[in-house]
Amino acid sequence: MAQSRPLFLGMDVHKESIAVASVAHAHGADVTFLGTIGTRQCASASLLRKMPSKATHLIFVSAAGPCGSWLSRYRTKQDDACGVVAPALLPKKPGDRGKTDRTDAMQWARLARSGDLPVVDVPQVDEEALRALARARADTLRALQAATFRLKAFLLRHALRYPGRAPWGPAPLRGLSEVVCPPPAQHIVFPEDVRAVTAHPERRQRLDHARHAQGTSWRLPPVVEALQALRGVQCTAAVTMVAEMGALPRFESPRALRQCLGLLPAEYTSAERRRQGAIPQAGTTQARSALVAGAGASRSPAQGSRPIHLRREKHPKILQDISWKAQGRRCQRSRQLSARGQHATGVTVAIARELGGFRWALAQQVPGTPEGQRSQRSCTPHAAGCRRAAAKTPPRCGVILGGVQRLVEGYACRE
Image 1 (cartoon, one colour):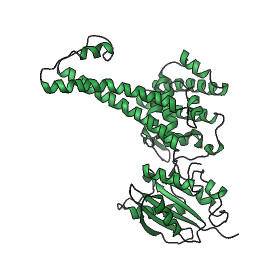
Image 2 (cartoon, helix red, strand yellow):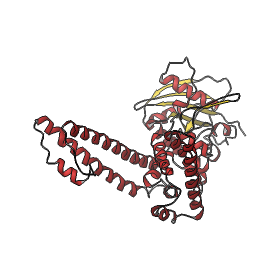
Image 3 (cartoon, helix red, strand yellow):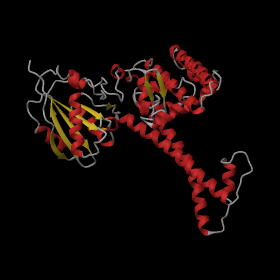
Image 4 (cartoon, one colour):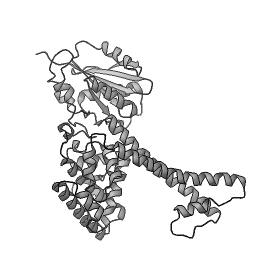
């Protein structure tokens, strides 16, 4: 059997150009900058035809972002190993302040050969579409809050107050329609602010209907249903969590999920002294916000309301037991931390960490989860999950890639 000779390609992808660098697997091989090509598929195909014929397998590495995702999906369809790199997690010297497309492509190719790349998970097309839908709803809520603040400030400046209890119900809006501002400029601004306050809730309702319609057509609705067995986790929070993080069983442990969400506190330990700091707030903000919002339900006693019992009745007994255990543990943990005098924000973050672990446990018990999703493909390096191109797919020259198996195990590409 001939020895495999993989070739590592680092690609810095932009909107109109791709900087490409390559390095061979041989020890001491120099990194070669191949130049800049276009983003069309014919340009990458022309580049591959110029690759050395001795290379039995190509391993592509690109940057995470909107440009790197489509390239990873395209190369994966071509039965090539392709990893998406998180630029913020790359090792960097303190005095190295130079950054160009050439240096980035050469650095990624060099780190890919050594197996030190922190490769992240690439969402599928349907997951990315549902993620965009969840983020559009979050943007609508923020826009509604900003529009409400602007209208409240306008009313306070003109000493207009509503004496009722519901300041934003139908009755106050009817009262606002009768307000007349003497200056013409203010009479133009005021109806626009009122229209913005009434338009954003309508947009949110449309997005909610679209989310319910599209939520049943992708591959992870059982995980969404299982997460709703927890107290404080409804459809919106469950869809946001799964759409942002993908298949939760892909994480090796609950700690890996918490680390990817940025919920583990900073720590400095030296000898017998142990000091913890704030959470790094890394990862996706939407998933972390949904997790922290669900942790607020732990302040109430550990008892279930009628909607929670109705949601739990739809699930198997093992999921009901996990959800009830989570509810009791979160309530007990919240009371213990509050009794110590811990700040309310710290208590909420600690409960959010507990809730993340129980979400991972519920996702592990969902029946019908493909085996390929249970490998760890998180934002930590050396995550298994990209073995298909090396072990199952025949190489270009018909040689089984046994020597490159160790190298491609560090990639977290989606099956």
